[in-house]
Length: 147
Length: 147
Image (tube, rainbow over all chains, first blue to last red; front, side, top):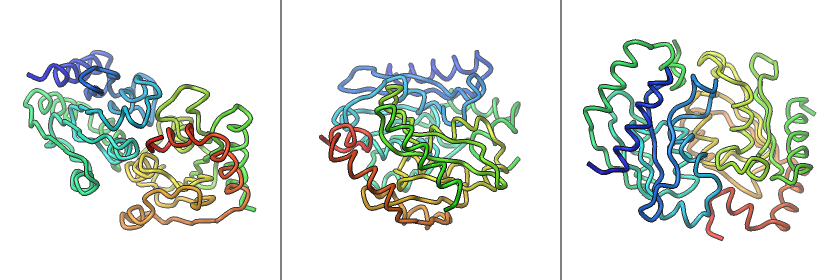
């Protein structure tokens, strides 16, 4: 398996171990990990730290050129916020664990020129299915859905 | 002048006083200020704390219903990231100081049902024009443009 994707799953599991929402993300530039993170809504009382945002924040301030040579991994299809962030920084490629438990604006991302790869990974899916079953209100809060 | 918009401008000026990028934001729910913030790229070495993100983060975890009754103010047209965040949380109305020095995906926001009000405020515009003139590389970094 792609070791960067494996790292994103490790981040998701780390989030779960912290009683958080099990979504992980990794940012790779020129074949090197520059950022990694996981959803921290619960852990930090955060409205913006989805996994991808936590990952990008952990990378610090990169140059526009670095983002434009990067690949963003996420265990789950990026929501409107995280997709918008990929667009802001012109991240050309996003590799997604699964999009069955939640699907962000994938068509729009592709229209804007982002290459999206959907792995349909069973481990990512099972992590989310169990979490959503056990914490439906928290999950709806995370995606802005009325409870 | 709308006191919430005035508060957003105060946030932008606070950012400038901290040597940061002069963009401010306020979140109002049911006529009450719940969050306020300004761009903190410089201050926190942050890749994600645009003014609107800093503002939403300062509000903490709100319910989906609260966001759906909110108004987001920003002194500048929201970028792809911040527009995506408004979409995630189904914020129905965004009031924008100006969109001449930078314009985010306004057409897309409107297509997705967000009411956008553009004030074309001279003070906001002058703040950004001067900042961009003095710090072009920093500004390009903030909007992901190649330097």
